[in-house]
Image: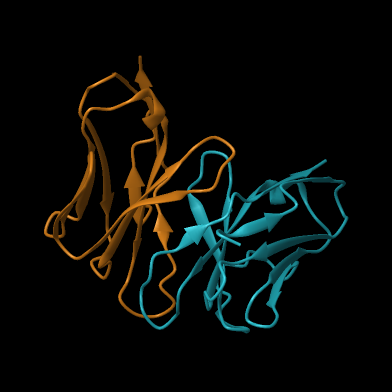
Amino acid sequence: QKEVEQDPGPLSVPEGAIVSLNCTYSNSAFQYFMWYRQYSRKGPELLMYTYSSGNKEDGRFTAQVDKSSKYISLFIRDSQPSDSATYLCAMSETSGTYKYIFGTGTRLKVLA
Amino acid sequence: GAGVSQSPSNKVTEKGKDVELRCDPISGHTALYWYRQSLGQGLEFLIYFQGNSAPDKSGLPSDRFSAERTGGSVSTLTIQRTQQEDSAVYLCASSTRGGSNQPQHFGDGTRLSIL
């Protein structure tokens, strides 16, 4: 079993829809949770960076962390065709080298 | 530069050749990471640098892989005697400091193809 599980998709939604992306994990030592967006042939771009449990909002993006369920989510409101990309979740512990453990990514397509 | 810079952006080489991949981190970032992204796989950690030291090399898949960092800045990942399974995108990330968790910022990677 992988430390971080993420549905690979693809996920297709109409423009304007609310998108929900999720990851589950098994390592209870994870305390930092990140979401990255990756366009084709580009590097991952940091979207959200959160510590421990709770919600964080930034514009159209909301990140949620539920440590009791070992489950994190990214919500995208009013989705746009420009949001079409692969979304990667990443996690790390509070000590050591802070290397990130990534999910495999969910491919999202927003249809105009 | 404004972001993490990697070169070359693409590299095609024959099996058995050595390759060098370069990463120029964001200015002032002391922590540097190398990851590998294979088709259908997530990003896989390879090695971490704090300054010029590499306290965590646990992700290097074999002794054909090595990396160094000089002047606390540029890093080079070297793969010797390349194999077809080395074909992947090699990504470099940097963050402001090690010893605590800071967001990692990625370059666009080097796409390596082994014929």
